[in-house]
Image (cartoon, rainbow, N blue to C red):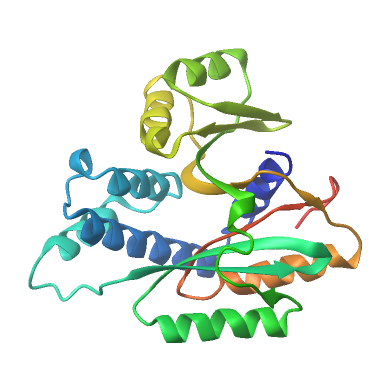
Length: 244
């Protein structure tokens, strides 16, 4: 998990301004709609995908009313809610880094064209399906803004697979199916859960330095700004002094 905790910190720093927050909420609501449709249920108790996306939305402070309304619209046969399809794109960034992109879209042709355009304009290259996916594992990732022994023990008891300590917190990895149980269990024991989401964790990382850092982050941020893009993952290991 080397490098992943640093990337989590960078992503948390982003989202501060209103425009970013609005886009973040929209992406969560789109994920909720897709989870209801794909899981065939608006009840989180019987729809694990919905459980996980709700947990992620709550840790990004998406209002509960927005979450409930998105679920209601998705389950209503008269709502006309958009039928989003999942699509994954892969490519390469500066410094030989691998980039894995998850999207939810109602127009695959539009999405692939937009993703390809960003790669071309920002110094990356789009790869074929499967070209970098093998370098990432699907995991649940829970972040606590503390790394106390009590927090670590609780995480282990609740089913955590691995942990990584940082100066300002604890990053916990779980099996995808255990994300909700671990995050809710920690919250129930009084620990503040700063984020909880399904993530693609790189099995190994590539150190990036010099001007490649700026170029890579410009590419990643441009991809994240696309409406159809839900998540962008990289195996980059950024310099310790990178501030974003």
